[in-house]
Length: 347
Image (cartoon, rainbow, N blue to C red; front, top):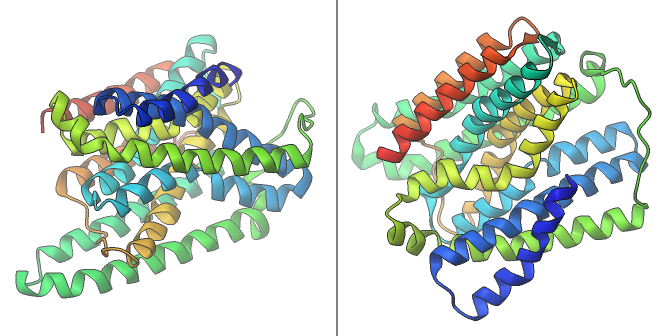
């Protein structure tokens, strides 16, 4: 969205703030406001490149860079040893996409249109994948309750790597499924022809530049999470599960809501559910692999995160099962998200 570009002014402001050693809370806000438009530019550049690369490569680029911002933020948090923040941000991104983004899209679209429809077949496939993904995160947690505590540290790492490899393999298979063998399921009819607004050179330069700047801002952002949390009385867990996902996904969230308002519910649902799948099946395994170069991170999530994930997936599957949506279903999803958010706030 063009309005997000006005926030680019916070990129130099945040860097100046770091040089001036402003308070952690102010630095957190400045870096967050800088990340939001940069994430939007990254997404826009990826879409522009897809016009030149063709639908298959373009689809792969969108799938890969769709959650690049969250991956970059999580990487710096991982590097800083903030494992609880990393895992909370993973869970929060999935919960936020399924409940907040999908809910807001259904609400906004439902206010303008009495009923909206979307691709039921592709949603069923994605929902099944999402359920599998959450099960993949649940099993390791159950493992912790069945193995003697003195053996956990030695077996965590191996289990995490195995689960990560399986999840990443399923992710690659899902790409092959959606782009090759069953691409007809995901076909969307476009009422208007869409043309590229940028040259390929410009798109590549913007993508590279936005990625580098997101890396810079993410490092600034992560560096003040602990002091900021202590200063204003928020837990790092709440910051990770609520604030980080909202900041990292803001541009993508706004796109989904706008698409729903334009009666393109297919796109809105695809953004919400596919983004959640990418977080679990792509971002999570990559972070597990990257952690091996620092301090290995386990794939075990706490009980609160898992319960929230499971219920989020179940209610989203139920609401989207008929291929139609209305404003009341959106309200229901948002209500569940608010309950979860408040619960995590007081946790």
